[in-house]
Length: 531
Image 1 (cartoon, rainbow, N blue to C red):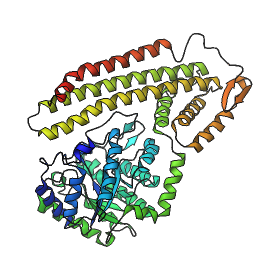
Image 2 (cartoon, rainbow, N blue to C red):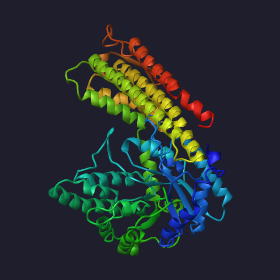
Image 3 (spheres, one colour):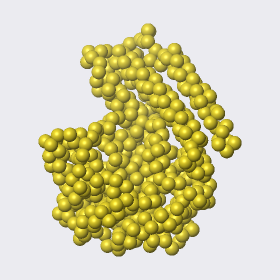
Image 4 (tube, one colour):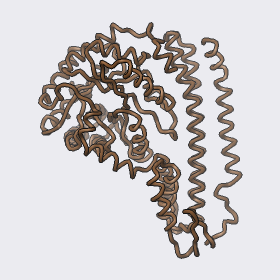
């Protein structure tokens, strides 16, 4: 698919003149020859254009330093979100495509990167992805708390929640640019009461200061975001959702803060109400004119000249838990928090294992729902009269891969949960009895097998082998594997990895896969004959 797209597969759909006019409108007013907020068709909500086409249009309007920052994919334990971000299978092709353009265009500086939201549970994953590319920009579109999102609508405290998460993102050392740092202003008009609106506005000032000071302290620039959709996002106060003057009035007072402008290039086909939007943006630029980066800017070189940023990144990555460890820890702690404190070791183990079985059922249900939705979308694309044949085939190729990725994620989830169930048994066998001991030991065992960092594996192995619990009897250790000579309890009536349960889950998964085959068979047949 990558090769097809990059061989001008969609050139008859792509409107060069419209794209070029829109780019000229913004680039000529940028006063900079770089842009590091550029997206491709892989975001799922951009026009179908090859990477080369985007490059050539950017070059034609004076961009000599271009960074591609596609929306990062989900980790391999989360179902794909193909309408908002890349698929995992697209990552290697994306990087290869941009790297080839680097070689083919020696007259330009071309960088490959990702745009990502920060989530403490995904810090290790974000680090792994960051190591694959030249740079990363923070595009915080939501705020997480554990496995859930913090409510953003009608929440007067959301600006503070948002700023605290952005602050953590900056402290991670992962990111080189903070995109649309005032994105939280988008939710101002969802506030219902005047009292809460006043609180939202007060919190927005505090949030703006938190973000600007943290970016200043870490030495990374924040972005005045120039989105093609800005004119459709005017708040009741007559201001754009972002860039919003509330934020930038604070920014202009932060000494040492760096600011750059970025074309959020998803769909540059047109701008509505251009004069109004340009005036509003011009006012923002004037507020921070003394902080705008002058001349060229390269985030790779900037990081090399910012030892604090790289040292912080390296240190945090060394101790970061994998997403799998965070996920299992959330499930285990949620279960342990809901059971009585007086339960014995075996009862605690059974409670956790039972909960994990329930989570596996939820995973199967989620994958089944995703599959059905994808099949419906394939049918809609096939029957569409509005899409060109080339656009249609491009979208169908991605949807076909979504089915494969959904199956793979479900398989990964099963493996992770089965490993966790085994760790429950291991934790009981080495003498864990309290909720704390179970939580700590299961998390560490999960981290040991899921991390790629040998130093972490070694430290965890040493911790497990030094674990002592007087009531379990004498323990012997062989090559770091705990062997218990005397078990505290016999598990006569309960098998934590119940054969019946495993058989039931296997049946559910097989049924799901069969359902996929039956459900999409006709669609794929139509695709194969040209739809």
